[in-house]
Image (tube, rainbow, N blue to C red):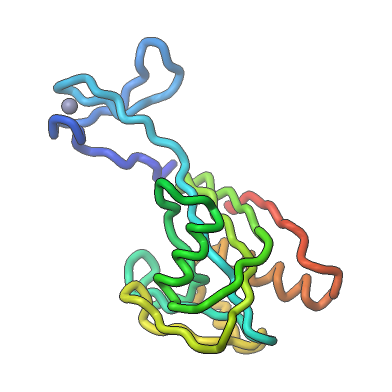
Length: 182
Ligand code: ZN
């Protein structure tokens, strides 16, 4: 089942929401049973980075649900008023407190089941110093053989790390990767 129904109550009047197909539409929409307002729900962008320092990559251990205590790349929901790149840099600052130089967009991953698109940039850390924010229990640099593969937070994080180490091994650069994550 799609886990994309975000409304239970109408943000306008507080009335009960029902999912109904409007007369001129072809899919169910969050419709207020009291005032009739329709809330349109569309996929959300999650933006983040793969911060690299020498041979090591920076991971953050999540201090918040979902996946509390698991390791992730710094990433979060894009905000209104910012570009993809600005969002990725902001999330890296907020979650890891790492000074970075943003590099190319690296992974575009459809996560249709939860109505999200995850986008990761590669990033070069300017120093090995970082200062995690309140959404992060700890941040740490990992060599490839140290990556906690069984303790990663999201499939998209695993996918991005796998591509990165693979691309680094083959030494042919870092092309853009796109995939659909089941
Ligand atoms: Zn309403």
